[in-house]
Length: 260
Image (cartoon, rainbow, N blue to C red):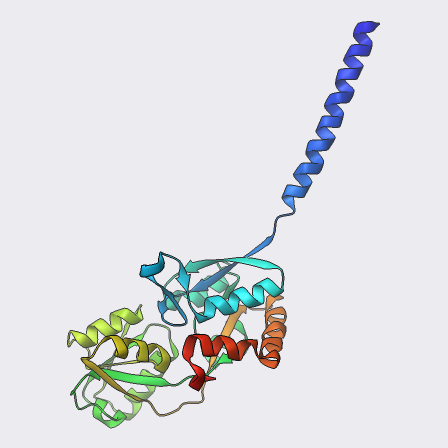
């Protein structure tokens, strides 16, 4: 009888212990929601790796994602890839959203959803200093570089229609475009003016001019898979940041007051 009571007591203890561990396990299962952000970290000051401060990806887009995701109760991790692969990454569910200075063109809208525009800038055509390239007309007969899959690539194709002798070549990374211009393999390259300005400040042997404005797809927006519930949620927080001044403050921090 004593043995039976002992066994029953032992079973009761084990059952209670099991219940306790189940409760603890359930708490651990309630992990914070984590999203994956796709970007191309070669686009300072939008997103880039500051090697002087470590290997983390930093920039305006990263801070914007931090602000919005935090307000919605999400954490996020960043997946760095070539710009040309970001849309397919959204379509194949490899990332939950994209923040990469991406323009919401009509072609892209057929494949993904976009938020409202969060930043608007122009393009710059850079070339070696003293190249004599000062207008679009000067590009005829020249070779220009553009980033693969970018709105600047579309701009290059449009220029080809007007200037048949113009050659357009694509590269995956902005840094590659700049290097091709410096080495003389490209006569010029088309880059977002904010990004281009940073490279011009670091390279005295380069110059550039602002390209004529093109309203198609103007401005940078966040991208999401078609039908994602995140689109509306992120857009709502973006609107609040516009209204309360948070977005302007972030723009001033990364781009300077004149870009507000």
